[in-house]
Image 1: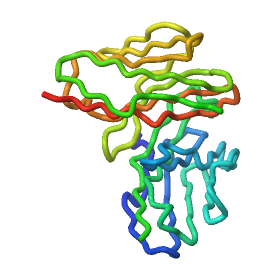
Image 2 (image 1 turned 180 degrees about the horizontal axis):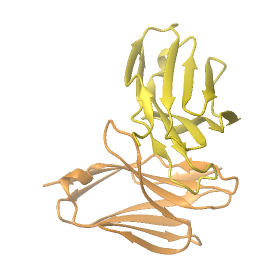
Image 3 (image 1 turned 45 degrees about the horizontal axis):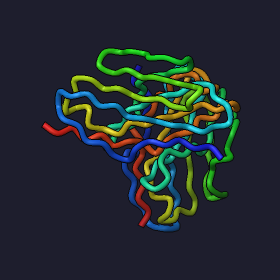
Image 4 (image 1 turned 135 degrees about the vertical axis):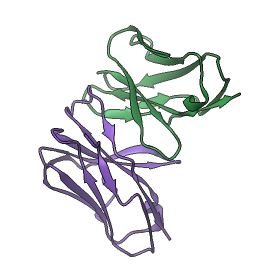
Length: 115
Length: 109
């Protein structure tokens, strides 16, 4: 398996622009997680899906953030409008289980810089 | 509140042994993970402990004491490629994964 695939790897945009990050989980994994990582705050869970359904989005910072999973092999995280404080590395991860007793498989991340 | 404490940074010498500690205070406990993260890369799974004791996996071992809220990751025969951040994460009673800030390990020749 190719692992979790994220795109783009790097994104530089200006404040106010829309940003869309994409993720393809490992085939057969029913759970998909979006994380954000910064030096100040470490790894933060934004949202996770089970069988394409959002289960917990309490970590989504505000209404500017939205996530979708239209099918088992694709998810997007959208930020609109983007702000400089959104600059971070965004990781997508997938897992066979959601009860956090199983391994998370992370994608290589999307490094976002908002100017 | 829920809290996981790890040292921010540690330095060790190639070929030596290093122990990275993690203490946690969470609402319940359903397991503890260690992940390795090289600079600019994604975290990768190292170990999972749910029962007290030592789990050995090659050069890496992970220990857990639930009564003390304590774990450590032991790395033996250090290699330069072990330079990375090591993240401790705990699953609480609600099966939420709480992440530590990570320990940056620097290996010197």
